[in-house]
Length: 379
Image 1 (cartoon, rainbow, N blue to C red):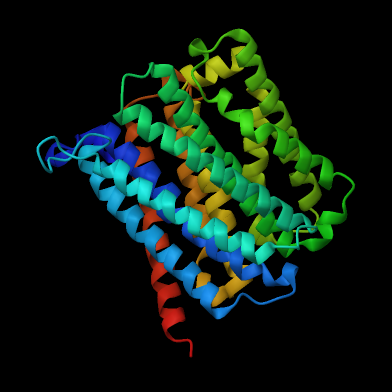
Image 2 (tube, one colour):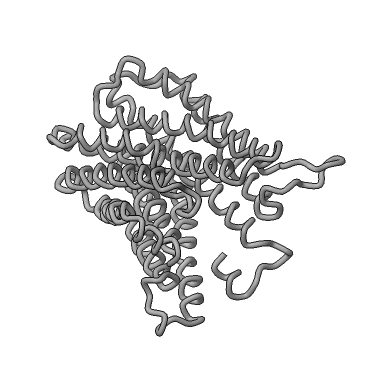
């Protein structure tokens, strides 16, 4: 996308479609499959029983299908976005259909998770994973609302906007954040004995279901609803900061940078409680940086840290290089926001932000190659 902003997009591709393809690949195929695999890899430590071989095969099928459907949706979104693909007389909303298939597969995972944790909900990591799976369920319902409002009938634009942000925020703030926090506590069980643990958990569980209100453009909401969104941001921001404080003394160095990005994200949510600051951030293009603090800085680097702890260093080589690459990329994004002085801006900022995306891509390709090589060498 960043090179397209400089040189234009080839083959008739459009920026909006590429953005949808990028976000769906991130949500459906980049984060969700390894997150599901990591949760099931750690669950036996808390349930006291191994996952049965038949259930493991089902989970592997779920993960494989999600990767396949995610790549298929990415390809269709790149060319057609949410539009209809010329198949048949009227065409088909193929990207929506494939995304819907991913949603159906999620239900298979939820069912397997429910079976695996039955009777074992007391530990903090499991409670966070329970909350994450509930968020995944609710976000899937919102996703059906997005599909219906986009393709059936004449709905007011605000309805589609609400469904979209409900889906995106429950998925990212709920499923992603809670699940990765669960992995953090799974690796640092001593942290769950802190006196703030339950309080921080409660703040997140109350705030996350309504935090989507904060993402809806401020001019579309009446002030009372906007204030409710601000209240949810306050709860989530305080809950996340509580977890940062609780976990920091316990975590290994591989978790330090992800926790720093979680603290930045939490702080930005506390600032967003003030409507004037939220409006400034909206006008100043801070939303893209915020998403990268959360999804790249905390979630992606957190997944890499959890994978190394779960499957060993040989399975996830290069986490230090990836961490450096992510930090550089996120810093260059600030050049495109209102934070960077206008007097120092110029075309060079677009080039810098574009070229900064190369190192993470090359690093992750190298990491995936080493991971596949390591896996294939195992007996």
